[in-house]
Length: 242
Length: 256
Image 1 (cartoon, each protein chain N blue to C red):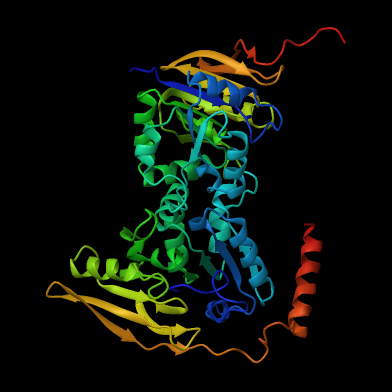
Image 2: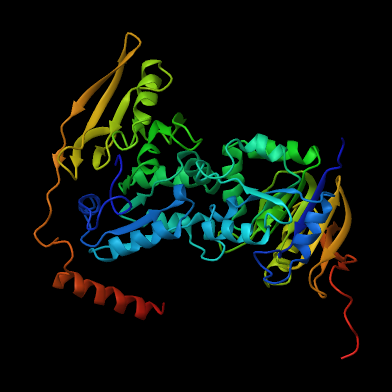
């Protein structure tokens, strides 16, 4: 059996941000190609917040998938051997929160290597916000307040990533400034937009909201140049008649 | 602390009073680092309640929420009189501190004379090694190494730690150190053990050494902390009531 590596990186969205809109979550479940996929939630970026884990199980109910989670703060709960467990999944779903804290905890528990292995083996990787930034070489984080700073991700995908691009007014100027200053060029996504990579190539951009956009940002002659990407809205076609 | 304080004892905890008494300031600034517990809201809430009723200025830094609540880490931590580290996963605590540069900031704080306190993971982190349950079973793990030697906590409360600790010391895997019961604590001035204290009379600490491939425990008798006359559980003494009003007024003035 050989499955191709896939990452679906949400600029924001899914069960934790879009109550009542399951389009992105349905999309990643379908991307596994399984009828009842094994889905493991990694809530590390939230500090393994209980309320987040509960909401995951509510949305990824046992009827449509085989849900589980790995908690690095309470190793007595959740799956016992993270590496083995991750390798057996069809989908790994990474929650939002603090990307720097998440990557630190992952590295301390060897999850960085385990996730790379699982990805290469065809386990679909997805997530929002911190759970998007982490797959790239560099992510733009707004942590530490004053300025957004690039943080080194797992590097499964080349280039950089910015999330919540439309929602937080400083993201776009900060991302452009970072790319001008030497951050790797990459992709930015609004809330509700998701970048679907097959192998290391961006195969498709999908959205759970009609207006959500995504962009490729490059450095050309020392300037940041932004190109909008074609986005497929996953919902019913928007009626043009009021 | 081997275990104790606001997270483990009924309030008002003698340990929390003791920690505050170590700071020379009349109204010490005390900052909770709840990192090891994943910045659990419950731990933060209990801290703010416990220390909100004491003469001090309590704050906390949540590394998981710096995006929503930015804190200039260096300025804030170095302006404290006491830094109080909550319990949880020792492995995660150190990994997150390193990811955010807190390992070097805390060394700076310690050298500047800021009192560093904590229980469980928040105790072991100051030593070269501790015995962590972060992997689901007791195993040695490295700390920051401000204090020489090793430390194992919950020595009576979590009995599976003790044999793991003794074996690790006996085999030379980790250096000799201290085993500490729940409700017992060690005070180090510089790197020298200055005092052993306890909030209940039967809590103990042990100096654990190795020779001839075996570990030896040497019991350390603690000074039992006494309850102040005003700390009657259940009642809110008038000075505490006044303090609450003062804090509330200050919060209003700060506009939050």
